[in-house]
Amino acid sequence: MRVLHLSDVHVTIPFRSLPWREMLNKRLLGAANLYLRRGKHFNEAADKLARLGELADREAVELVICTGDYTALGTHPELAAARLAIEGLTGRPHGFMTVPGNHDMYLDDSVDERRFERHFGEFLKGEPLTAAGVDGVWPVVRLIGDDVAVIAVNSARANPQFWRSSGRIPEPQLAALTDLLADERIAGRFVFVITHYAPRRADGSPDEWTHGLENGEQFLAACARLERGAILHGHIHRPFSLALPGVAPRIFGAGSSTCAHRESLWLYDVDRSSLRATPGRFDASGGYRLDPSAAIHIALPA
Image 1 (cartoon, rainbow, N blue to C red):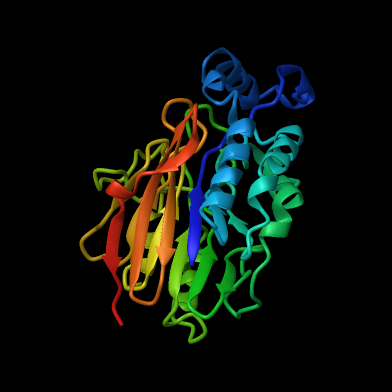
Image 2 (cartoon, rainbow, N blue to C red):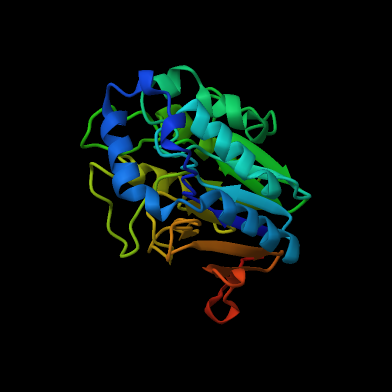
């Protein structure tokens, strides 16, 4: 099974296309930051996503996983533009799976109107297992072939405060995740557990409380015994992989796949005996390229 992992693509739209009636709040500051500073790093996001589609074709990718942050401000026009931009990545043999990021759930209106679900709902469909869908659609479970499963939990939420961009996995989802990992229909498969927020930073430390996953330790405890699996996330715009003592699955952060001069991704090859994780980068002259010399090889228990 060959899986492409991307994240934090932050597709931008023209300034005039923003819904200005929704800007008399935190979005006004976010929009100013986007168009005066941050936006220049993502001006080519849609074009780069098209180039990622070329990589997926070239490398015979079977499943694409995106760990959120398609937008900057969580508005309908941004989500529509992002959905269009990923079209070239969605036609894989085993489809496309995703979770929202904090920018996609930016404020209460984004959450209350279920904007992410309205634009990306086709990718949030899974198996009707007992512990799936206990919190809206979450967790979403997909059984792929005979050997792989993906469990998506939503850690993103609205953050109306100007100073906060933290996340939290609701308790019903954490309890369901524990039950799902013990489900006989999942046991024995290689399991990708995906969410937006990083449970730890690249150095192994917890993120700041204003930026990180509030219940990251509980999340790690739920996954700790998953010997055949990996935790995939986004949110931190630098790619890394991390092995933690006492936590069986390795953690992989995809960074940002479209941020200028630091574009990143992971390509995973999974079989019954091993996981190989190969990082990828962007070269403006040649598009996205893999770096096999930096691949991580993990032997899996029988």
